[in-house]
Length: 267
Image (cartoon, rainbow, N blue to C red; front, top):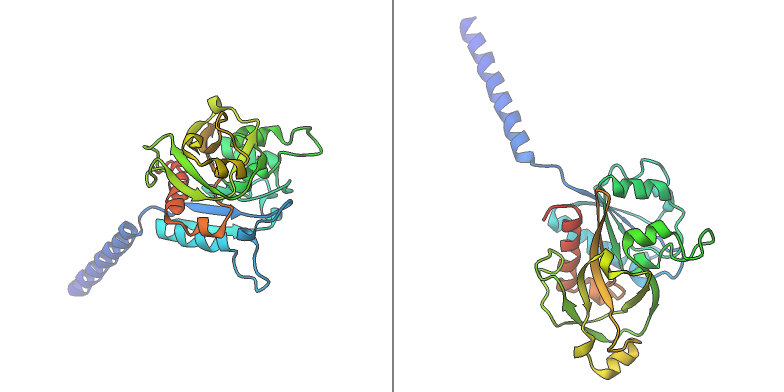
């Protein structure tokens, strides 16, 4: 009986050791991200899902990027998933690629951000809530939170990018003078003093024909990407991301992933 007791005790120790090892190997829980890309205005091709029900181009790219970086990512194009008071509590970050006025729970979104949520806006996120029947100039809290509102854009000629903060995670993979062709937004209600600038258009180094096609001039300032904080929340916005080839550009992917990491306070 004494031997049997020793065997049972040994087995219990082995089991406990195994459980301990499993707990040690599990590591910290993966950060959960929600990518919301519903369009209530112009629908961009990168977020248009095929009739087969597959993910859109941007969703596929972001899925691969996020999983490689160790995130757990979920996708929705249904505002009902952001209607509840606690809809975002399951997530550490939310990414908007939206247009128009999504019928989400506005108060819940702002509370979630100010309580410490990470908000990432890509391209059309500034083409969201900037024109609203309830407000002459859109939903002001959202525009103030994200840092500006879409005003206009030109063509998709190549632009030369100026890196304003080379030490930021969202710019770590970029070099000053990076050239990229994309639909470059211009903004209203943008205050450079209320954001931390990451990228802008280097108009001094651009060719006249590209400036003209982008509806830009050398005496104006054109922001491209920035960060800011709102309460305990962190906000990262980049206006890049209109074209399919931009989403597959490794430098762009590093830019977005660096912005996500910063918003999640991981760097």
